[in-house]
Length: 247
Image: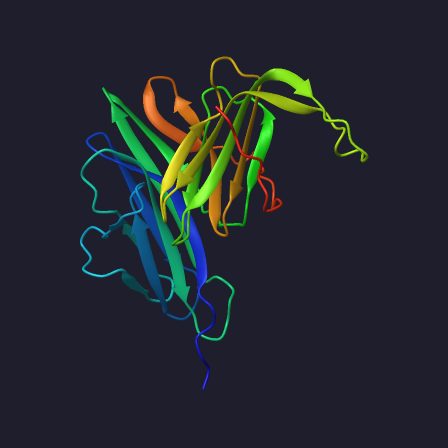
């Protein structure tokens, strides 16, 4: 008898709710067999939140079926997220397409931004100039039951090097004009602006086994909504040792 395979998991981040915003998660079964889906939703604080209109968190999708779902959040919330797990039998390939949208209204304007599926990795990082990233923020989601750490560096462009015996040790590195260490609680979300006091360079290093990073940009001036910047690629695993940041 075939057993259950390891669940196929994906994360839909940056779901906004409140008086002027709402977000919708869409699932479509692309297979010719039924699929059971488990939807685990969290607020930005990490707290669990139920699906609106559903007593549990398991959704049954018939072959070819599509369903739309929202989280039961009434108050202002910009960093909610949901983890989607497929309960498949004896296979690990995904069967269900996952997508989402966020809509925010301000005055007579209604703006819609797509939400893209992301997959957690170990110790993801970002580093680069911020000239082309004005107004952008990096969203970090801790998809794990333990706290994770993020180290931020804002630099005005000054470089330094440390004399050493290897070429790597002698490389020029940005001098942080402001640096912070931040701890993100289990299943929590944190957003970090890439700009601070006219900085030229920004870096973010993380330490944790299951972390999602996404770059978000303002969709339009004056409307409180962010769109995902799919052109940004985050680095892979980095060494376990992250230098301590100092204010």
